[in-house]
Structure formats: structure tokens, C-alpha cells
Image (cartoon, rainbow, N blue to C red; front, side):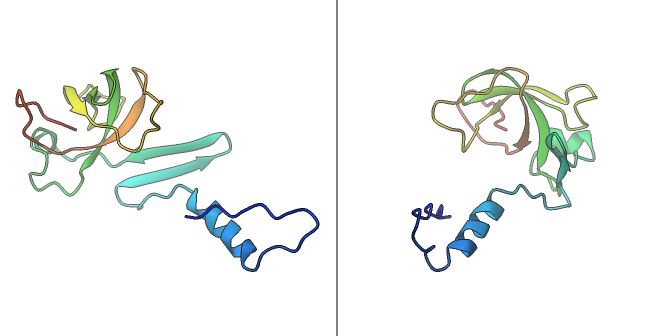
Amino acid sequence: MIIPQRPISGQKKPKGWDAQLWDWIKSMTIFGDGKTIFVKKMGDGITLSAKPFTSQESVNNPGGGSAVSSVPAKIVSGTSPYTVDVYANGYDQAATSTRATAEVLMLNYAATLTAGTKVLALLAKTNVTGGEDVV
């Protein structure tokens, strides 16, 4: 997405500038798919939520035929890769998996996530040294 250049004071707006501005603003709007990721817009912010797994087996066997692959998780420690606890039944329930490893993509270079930060994790079982599960 190209960020539209600010028009120079006293000169005409470039042709198509209004449409570019509209497209740029709309590109920053958060949307869910309405099936697995939900967005609730409130006056003081936006809440993202995910449809939880339907069974404990789905959490213990990622990719085992479950239609939902994203789950609520909470950062425990580290920097990317982070250690997370997975809350497939929601944050108000006990963790369904603890000490999983999570790679965080698209985080600013200098940014870090603190312990307790809630995230949505995509489950994928991968083989890494030590046989850990990576979220």
C-alpha cells in the first residue's frame, strides 16, 4: 500500500489523491473472518478473539484435522522465539499447553513482547532440535 503524499499548500491535489487516501485509511482497518477470528470495536479500543478448539485432542495434535488452527496464548518469557502458554478453551480456563515455543512474525525490529501479553497463536507441529512443539 502506497501512503499518499501530503498535498503541497496552495497547489491542486494530485489526480486520484482522494482515492489513495481512502484506500490507505481502509488498509489500516482490522477485520476478522467472522468464522474463526472475531473483531469487536468499542469506544475505547478493539478486542480480537479466536474461536477456541473444540477438543483437547485438537490442541495436543495440531494439524490433526481440526478446522481451527488459531488459539489464544500468553507470553511467558523470552524474545523471539518466545515461550508461551496456550489457552485453547479461553483465558478464563486453565492453560491447555504450557511452555510451547512461539515465533512472532511482523514485530518491529526493536519491539519486544512482555510476559503476560495475550496473542493469537497458529499451531503447527515442527521438528526442531530437542523435539519441541513450535506454536
